[in-house]
Image 1 (cartoon, helix red, strand yellow):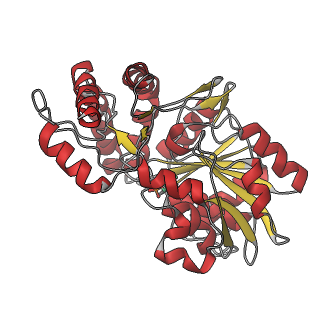
Image 2 (image 1 turned 180 degrees about the vertical axis):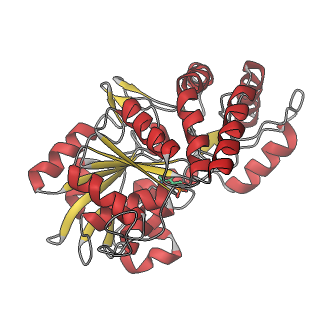
Length: 378
Ligand SMILES: Cc1ncc(COP(=O)(O)O)c(C=O)c1O
């Protein structure tokens, strides 16, 4: 690689224009004066605006995308039962099942969608299976999502969507997180929008809505009592976090447009290359381009070494695969593994993610593409 000029390009970067930073600091000043620092008006506004975005009837704000998954799993009472979970996902998806007392049963992925498929789910169904967790990897809502929802209905299972990657993403106009009994989002700093730390559960199910509010606040029967009816936890979202989340929700449209500009440029530039595949976006879907996955045709001999040298020579950081190692290969999940999940193993080992963030310039995007072409042709 004898690259053009080096440009230091990080993999992700949060987007907070000055106006938004001022709004948040004013709100924080107000809450410091009032002392209303948790479970108050901003949290409620945050929930209301999540409902407006997604079209869900109810939203419950919590302190992370991880607790957002565990709470519905507790309400759905997975203890001692099997839950089908993609192996190609983040630790938290599988861990939430374990923390709620259930057994994760890992499922392979469709190489076209990066998500589970009805066919792969069928192979892993057990007599103890009560439900399925679907993850919208990279912000892509798989074209098979409605089929997966139908498959679950036919089998008498619920569907929970871990939409941690999928703020603003839709399939046939339906927002991620609204295809099953509940959906969950993460607002971690690397996500499309962030609250610092935070998460939210969306649902049209009144029982899940009502019980989720109890679980997030130590399982108390109400805010002002000390009677605990559920095995809850401190999963509350604080008001400062809600303020950051709100300002980002209001900026989402602009963030999506800026990400789409870079994502479409990558698609165009990579669609005919001879060394790999660009991101495949479902025809009737809208993606937030949370991650731009590029899959080289040939496996790396040493992906970490490739990324290190790419960064040194071009300044471009390819840090962070979607998932480097599938969950069934993670040491902590050995008790729950079983079978050969070859598609996920292959994809996890061979993909890379290109930098993408709202403030990225076209010059930076061009530099990423030129550097990639040079590295693979060279
Ligand atoms: C697919 C997925 N699920 C769950 C989580 C957990 O979210 P959090 O970090 O907000 O707890 C993350 C991300 O971090 C994620 O990528």
